[in-house]
Each structure stands twice: as C-alpha cells, then as structure tokens.
Image (cartoon, rainbow, N blue to C red; front, side, top):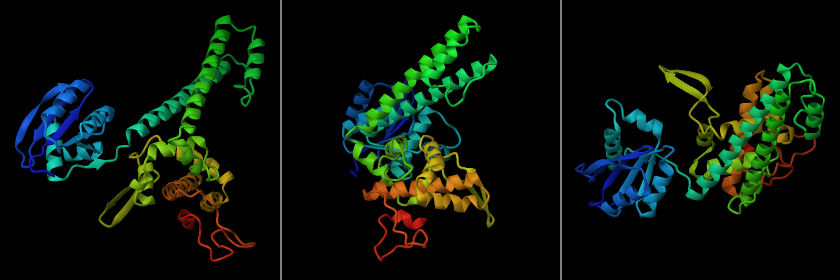
Length: 362
C-alpha cells in the first residue's frame, strides 16, 4: 500500500453518510457529512487519492455504496456489524463511528466480512422476494381456513386449496353472508396470484445461465430440491470462502451456543448468529431428505434411536450442508459408495476411493 494513500471510514444511513479521511499515520485529512446519493459518492471519490482504502459497516444500504466506490477503482472493505459494535464501545455517534472505522482500517483490526458479487446479490434479492411471497401465500391460506372455522364450516384440509374443491365449497355456502363469501373468493384469488408469481420467479432463477449448471449439480443429492439448491447457491455465493465444514455449520446456525469458563463447557440452543435465509431451508430439507437418501436416512435413524427427534434433524442438516459444500467445491455430482451385500454403508466392494469426501463423514 502506498504511503500517500488514505483510509476512508463511512457510517451509512438512509439519508446521509458520515465520513472520515485519514492518512496511515492517523492525521485527519477531512471529515464531514454528505447526502446519501450517487452524486455525492462520486464527489467524495474524486477528492481522495488513488489506492485509498474505503471501509463501511454491513447494512441494508451497503451494496450500492460498495459498488459505487469499486467502480472508481478503490479497495472497499465491509465490516461485520456485530464485531464492530463489540469494538466501538463507549461514546457513540455517526462522526465517531466513521472515525473508528477509519482507525480500524489503518491499524489492521478491521473485522472484514464477505460480500457477494453484484450479480449474485441481485439474484439473491429475487430469491428472497420469492420466499417472502411464499410466506404471504401461507398467511392467506391460514386466513381462509380460519374464516371457515370461525363460521363453523367443515372442510377437507388436504383439498381446501384445490381449485375445483374450493369452487364447490363456495357454491354450497349460499346461507353465508355475501360479504364473507366474497372475501373468501378474493383471498383465494390472492393465493393463486402469489403462487403463480413465486413459480415464475423460481423458474426464472433456475434457468438463469449463471446458476443453471450449479443448481443441477447440487440437485444430484437425493432429497435436495430446486428451492434448497437455489437458496444454497445464492446465499453461499462462493463456497471456497469456507475453509472447512465447521465454518459452514457456524455460518448456517446449525451449532449450539457455547459458553466456556473455568474449565466448564455449557451448550445452549441453536445460535442466533446465522444466515437467517439459509438455516430454515436446510432444516426443512433435513426433514424430507432421509426419505430419498439412504445415507442421510442412516444418520437420522441412528440419532433418532438416542431419543431426540429435533437433534436427529439438526444432525442430518449438518451432514447435508457438509455434503453440499464438498460437491460445490469439487464440481462433481453426488454418488453413494458401493455397499456390498450384507455390508454396512461406508464399506466398498473394492479399493476404489469414495467419489465425495463428505461421504466419509457419515
């Protein structure tokens, strides 16, 4: 790094950005506040020297600011918000936050976190929108069921949201107030619209040339469907950023909280520090995957025999995540080891090595 380069700390907000510019020795060059828009970013970028380093906290506003500074050729670092809060204790305001980020950059203690490429972030937003639409459809379905129960109407739970069954059910409710029937029909129309929209978004993502090959590779694992594969690919982005499965499991929130003191190790429930979009998808996949995957079914049955169903699901989710990571890194599809007659999983007929390293963890 050049001795004449600057360290630029940014504290981002919806309408404003506080900034602090320092030399590597700690001398303040400029500090202030500007409006949060591209023109102001361009003005600031034009006033700082080449090879300067820009740092900011990860927030919902980070993406476009990150991309804007990168387009000017600067090195940009994004800080882990939890770690930054732990470091910046005591007196706190926007100006101090910007200067603290600046000092962490120049001293080498900035807690940098990963930020995905712009195209992946754009696709990720589409997938998260699709997931939100699915949740909205589920809420509407529950509302329909609640309205029917509130009116004392019996219905077939499995068939309720089928188009023909719902039409026949509505036609039989001529004794209900017309407003109630109309509301039920409107809610059903809303469910159909939301379901068609989420299918359109999902189909578009699955056919995207930037994802298609990777999705097909991940879906080679029995029990891994299109939604799980898409969520994995877009939330993980670059699988090589994880050194081992331990880092991945921690990132996914599939490990319990640990508190160790005085030689005593205490474990709590699943940690809240996780990727909140990926964790539930892996857990839901772990509930279904053992039906289709004999390797995961063996793990599930072994843990289930110990008497804890939820723990068995979490163990399957961990193994599934480790397997997906190995496949994603190697670029080779899933393939079970050969199992000899009367043998156990893990015993091969020949000395041929296993196709996937993750299968050895079973």
